[in-house]
Image (cartoon, rainbow, N blue to C red; front, side, top):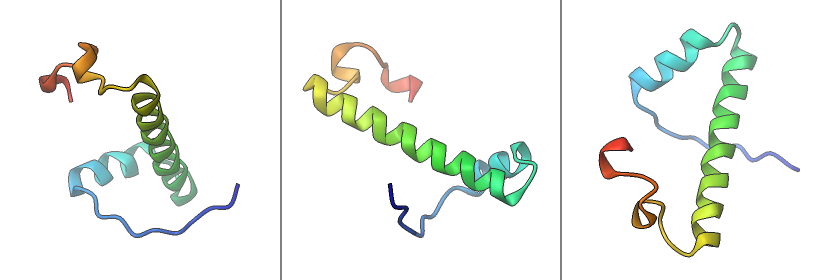
Length: 64
């Protein structure tokens, strides 16, 4: 699958946590790539289920 380059803005504290968890720049990029993939999977599931997870009672607003 081809990769696409995008510029995104993130909260400084979120990026600092990722940098702290990563041993190298390559690992930092992989953590971010995996997070984006997981977000995409979640969006696909929501569309497949026909309702938002919060509407199904699976996620409370305070948990997000």
